[in-house]
Structure formats: C-alpha cells, structure tokens
Image 1 (tube, rainbow, N blue to C red):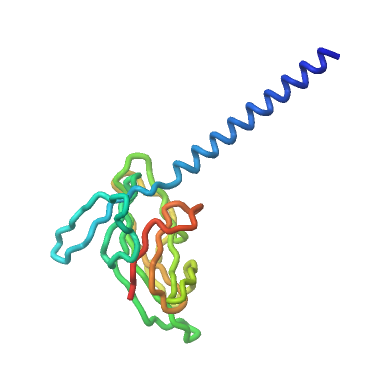
Image 2 (cartoon, rainbow, N blue to C red):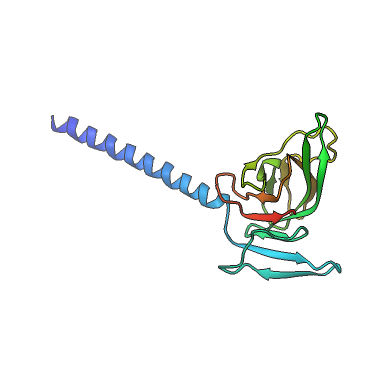
Length: 180
C-alpha cells in the first residue's frame, strides 16, 4: 500500500513538473512576441529624420503619415502614403496604404499583411480587403538582418486610421497612423 502511495505521489510530482515547464515556456514565448518599447521617427519633409526614444507617455497613436515606429527588436515600420477614394470592381470604395518594414536586428523578423488593420470613423477595425486594381501588395515572410520590404495594403471603405500590431495576440495596436 505504501509503495502504491509513493508511486502516485511521484507521478503527481512529475505531472506538476511537466505542467510548470510548459507554463513557463509559454509565458516566455508570449513575452518574446512583442514589446511596448518603441522609438518614433518623424519625417520632417527635408530628408532629415528626427529620432526620439519612446518615453513612458509618448504616444504612438494618430501618427502622421511618414512617421516611423521602431520596436525594441529593431523592426522599423512606416506608413509611407495613403490612397483614398479608390473604386473597386463592384463600385465600392477602397482605401490603400503603402507600408515599409526595415529590420535592423540580428535574428530575423516576420512581416505580414495581417499585422495591419484599418479603422473607420466609427471605430470599427478590419483586416485587408480585396481590391481588383491592387498592385505591389504586401505579402508575408521574414526579413534577415538589414533587410527591408514594402507593399500596398487595401481596406474596404473609407479608413481613417492604419493600425499596426507587432504582436498578433494583442488587442491594442502597437502604433496607429491618422490617414485623414
């Protein structure tokens, strides 16, 4: 009887140890997915860029088109331009943005069209839409150190903000750009 109790106790300890290992590994993975530290770079229009380290209260919302946000991992993201009033094949209105990623880290960084959402005047957020006349559309992949990629993303309707999510598990955007 005592031997059976010892075996049950040992198997419970092993299960608890395995659970703790998985829980800690998952927590480490989630922590590594994103960071709230960023550097905001503003395009002054004369070719010079002004960099400011993100302070605790420095906003990364409603940024001007042309402003760059750099994550703690070294991935810089910019909304370069906006195309409003586009007309799709069915007569519906579309909004397009052109974005650029530049990676200055060491291990590689992923990019994806699903890093982005468009937000309308009512605060409704949506993923990309299909634009029949779309060109140079952003795809998905990984950037090596020093790599860059750029492309267009199209949204249904009149979009007022472009939202960038460095961590797809987050509900709050890492940065947003005012488009109108």
